[in-house]
Amino acid sequence: MTLTFIHGGTVVSATGSQLLDVLVDGETIAAVVQPGSTALGADLFAAADAVIDATGKYVIPGGVDGHTHMQMPFGGTEASDTFETGTRAAAWGGTTTIVDFVVQTPGQRLQDTLGAWHQKADGECAVDYGFHQIIGEVNDESLKGMSELVSEGVTSFKLFMAYPGVFYSTDGQILRAMQSAADLGALLMMHAENGIAIDVLVEQAIARGDTAPYFHGTSRPWQMEEEATHRAIMLAQLTGAPLYVVHVSAKQALEQIATARGNGQNVFGETCPQYLYLSLEEQLGAGFLDGTGGFEGAKWVCSTPLRSRAEGHQDELWRYLRTGDVTTVSTDHCPFCMKDQKDMGIGDFSKIPNGIGGVEHRMDLMFQGVKSGRISLERWVEVCCTTPARMFGMYPRKGVISPGADADIVVYDPAGHTSIGLGKTHHMNMDYSAYEGFEIDGHVDTVLSRGRVIIDGGAYLGSAGHGRFVKRELSQNLI
Ligand code: URP
Ligand code: ZN
Ligand code: ZN
Ligand code: ZN
Image 1 (cartoon, rainbow, N blue to C red):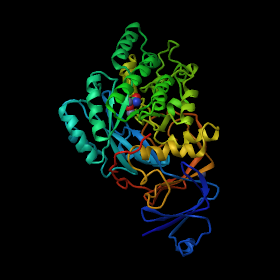
Image 2 (image 1 turned 45 degrees about the vertical axis):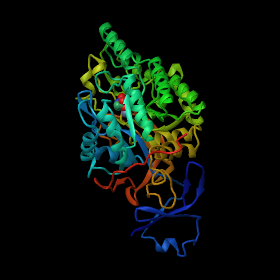
Image 3 (image 1 turned 180 degrees about the horizontal axis):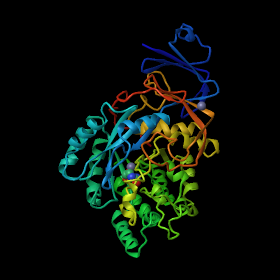
Image 4 (image 1 turned 30 degrees about the horizontal axis):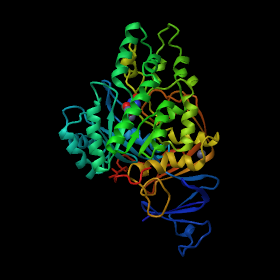
């Protein structure tokens, strides 16, 4: 077994930060000790096969990104990162576990779709991965299939109130799936937008000639998100299902979540860096309303959409992140290239594949919240690492630096710097970055995945197939 000794750094957990040394034995953390300690009865420097000097740096649990879509079929194309390229990019960004979504489309058995996703990911991933299941067709067969999936380590299920004719579920179907989730103790994840009303607004916008990407956002106004979030909360309350509302971008939706939580309901809100940093005004700034037909705004087309900065959503999202009503920050990594993918929607925004890639940037972007004083160092680790691990049934194996946990560790240099430049300064399989021009204070220096150094000194040292499937437990004591 290889012994790795990480010394001199500040170990950050969700509850505190301390100068501590970490001993890794093979794939797991063997000990977390006071500097200079001989608690293990040996000189750890001498005993170790490899020594990592973390002086002046933070030693944090590897990031857990609870919401990604590698090579997801969507909008007539497929998300541009494969499990191989996407998990490698995750590693570069200090994320050592992803939870991706298996997609069931109508007519398929849930169990078969899970098998198909295992085939896509097996042998390809640089870091560990789990699966959520999208239920695209709620029927007797799918509801029965849910318990089988739980026993195979897929313990959360996503439904859509958006995308009629694709993933959409009626309220009756949602009710039934929630009843099953409640029976199983499984987490019900919800894409909360009123898709029926949105489709009318989209049709009207296109008919008016408002076809530029900006109108994607204006045809999915916050009322559509607030209403659907409220409806999902009421259905969850009725059934007793724990509810996790994904990619929340409207402050009004978060107010609904905060109220439900205040009433003691098991409801959780997830947001993503794009909603904390980007806005509808960015799309306007890209200049396609000037009559030139510019299409740059497509880079930021995702659902829920980026919201207007002027409406004050971002400040509220940050506030809810501080108070705990935003429980996790995931990326909803769903990358599409501008060329041959996003450009399918030139002349009709409704044909732009929805999604933004960001799996590589989440830890860095959220660290900027620490730098600016919006969240604490510990909250950074909590929302990006510990809570997603706990929420999705992987704790204490993931999300914490503690004896017995998987040695998924990031050495983060707060004095380092990362520029997200034009073109290829990232490792995601995308021909642009949604965060072009962002200057990041901080740098992912070294990444260990189950004890193996996969990023160090600006080099990728991992390999496809190192990452393993994580069989997840049901989450407990969620609130
Ligand atoms: O625009 C998005 N969010 N694309 C990914 C699919 C989803 O709804 O999460
Ligand atoms: Zn969604
Ligand atoms: Zn998503
Ligand atoms: Zn550095």
